[in-house]
Length: 277
Image (tube, rainbow, N blue to C red; front, side, top):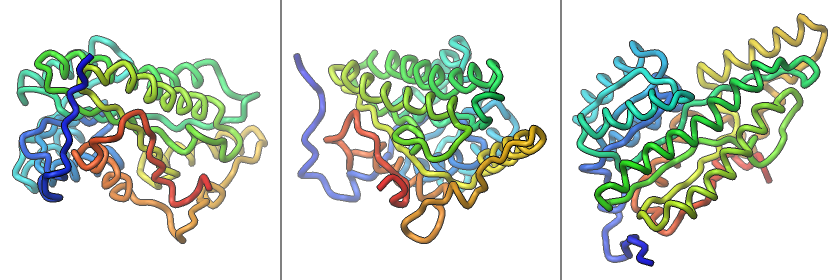
């Protein structure tokens, strides 16, 4: 069996990090971490398709990054839990960008509630976005990456919740992120013969708009029920004296997407400021 992964040892550092001519799809990309990832990929030369439920914000982000970095910047509204929606997104990338070289499964939700208070709907929604969404995105990307034999890279944004349990109230989230980490390993095995690498990036808590809103909503719901939930200070287990920023994580994703990481597949990179030590 042939495995089409080149030895890139003779190439320059500038060439290895360049994404010139590559096409990247990023889900959950209208703001926060997804937009930061799109920015670094575009800076390295990749054309972008930014995907989000918030179509207007995704369109604005794509236009901003295209103007800033001189790449093509497209956007679309898509639901990562819906097969037809994800397939249509992948088809759009083929039709408008000419292919898919990089697919970043970034879309995720961050609900929290004590297990005795957690409704079925919260559990189902969390797994639908954080686990099913990773599967659907990876499958549809791989189907299209493999048609011409050029391969590609799939990057799953996981979480330190995929390797540990940091605090109470996160049963659905932790379960879904453990699932995403496991899928990263299994997808790497399945897709290597197609020239597709699969990597995970696991950030610790990053105070993005979405994460802050979710943490606040969970704390308010718990307080209304007389249950004490952890503060944001509990989420900060950094060993370097500060929380991570979206760009801290985006730079790790850029490494994973580029040929600098050519020898890697199936791994999950801990972008956690030492939290999991």
